[in-house]
Image (tube, rainbow, N blue to C red; front, side, top):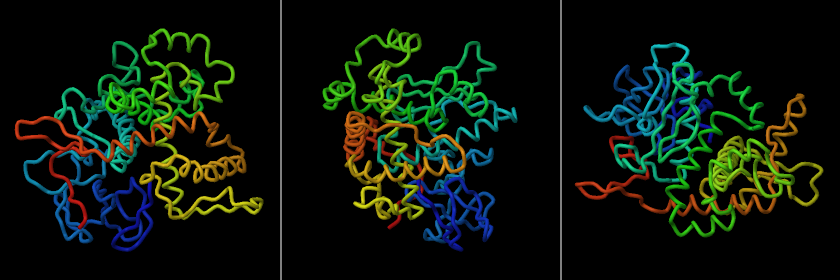
Length: 378
């Protein structure tokens, strides 16, 4: 994630901002240009002076405090933005508790979609591709007949609304011994399953996947049952990024995919802040994070790790300085880095492909969903 600046007054902005605190201008996120635009006009149609005075509307979910993304003004067009078009089921927004949970979930989901767009990964909606299209279902345990299990099934990612409650999520984090259980982590993990189906299964990368992660044809349900009964094997840290990754090759891939997104997004944020670490105790320059590094544009995992190590060290030591646990409680062994490298190559190779789905009018590109959206800057 990068930092933004108000294109009207230059004030520092963050991804979720809807109004500039200095000049008071309304703000909206343009996903294809990756900008937060200051806006004139409203309340329905807005002009972006910094973008050739084009007219925009907010995503329909902005009315519920759940979105700040923009679409080009086009009467009769899809009212939902490039992220919200993937929502299949949302909670009852008349319930203020569930509305609040959904707003929290949407903020995490938008950060996921930000990364997928930056990596140019295929993002078909369910309408565009009924077989492989991506759809999110946000369900309430309290009104379901059975507990809602967060997971992925054939392009549909289901998330329990209770994961938006800090106390409930902390209880589950402790119960399942998951030191890094977060909403954003859930999204990044489940999208890993989605892209395994799309980019690995039955494709040229499948052989290398099995070499690194193992044979996924091993019975999944039995593997999970064994994991929850016995836990991770001794010495798992040498081979896996997390204890849960030991349960099955599919979970190992999803955990590694999520971790890759963690590293890329956090490194971009550090670079946006101008982080340039050269600790005084470092005599040979090993702990250096360069200012001009763009992790989204680089498939070289060694380069990413070289920039990440000093950032992780800084985060952990800052946390220790205020009496908190390490923010990054992971070990990057050569075997884990090799798996991360596989994911990096996979997503960058996929990002270079123009993905399409069949249509009566000819192939439809699906690197981003079709429909009116803001145009690339020229």
